[in-house]
Length: 141
Image (cartoon, rainbow, N blue to C red; front, side):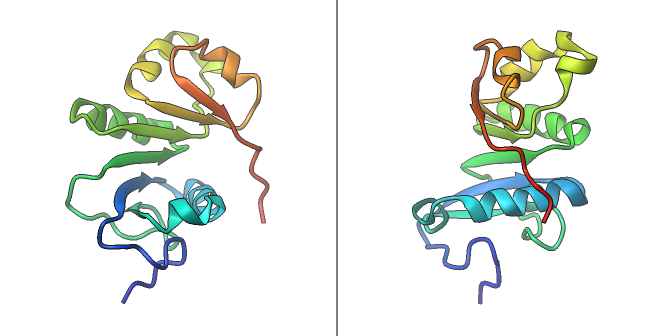
């Protein structure tokens, strides 16, 4: 029986997307992001990964995609490994490279297929090096 509150009805033919939140605040952001996805995506995608109570435990199989959330110290290393395996990588909540190390932008852009940012100016920071989507800034419940 599936008890996943984010994806209560995964189908046998669902795409599997690994989600890495890494720590409590990233886990909360990931859960809100996944709950906000349209039903046609949630109903055809099986989300699993590492996080807290809001995400399922890590499973040992190859995902169709990797979604990492915040926590760049861990998640960017995981993203690089997934990229080397040919797994598409999406990251939510950009590392604040615009404040502390712009030189890392090209490396980050090479390992990500999609970057979802919470500050509108971050789209310009990555200067077309990676596909960027500006999402509304999350509000704590």
